Image 1 (cartoon, one colour):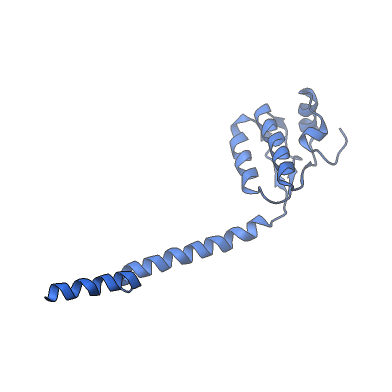
Image 2 (cartoon, one colour):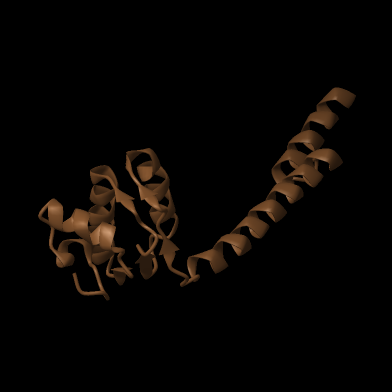
Length: 140
């Protein structure tokens, strides 16, 4: 008979959540606090308005990292500084065009500013217009 009485007590504890082991409860609280800290840490980054500075060599080797940097800033206005660019590859240019179109579709402002002469030469060489890449600033 003791066995029958223990089962309803276990079922009742399981239903009310009172039967958690202290270690499991502490682990769950730690995960929740980490999630809260992560959420708090991510929110301020989304509002940062500092320009994304492109690297000096904007070639296919760095195209994925540029894409990832752009994606991290998706959902807010963005200024891309192309002032340091000395070499530009087509894969990176395609990523910048896609970013301009994505920001426009999302309804956020996007601009490539301070383009270096080398960056402008590449844009002109491949037949792109300033509007296609959302260039602002220096006349080219």
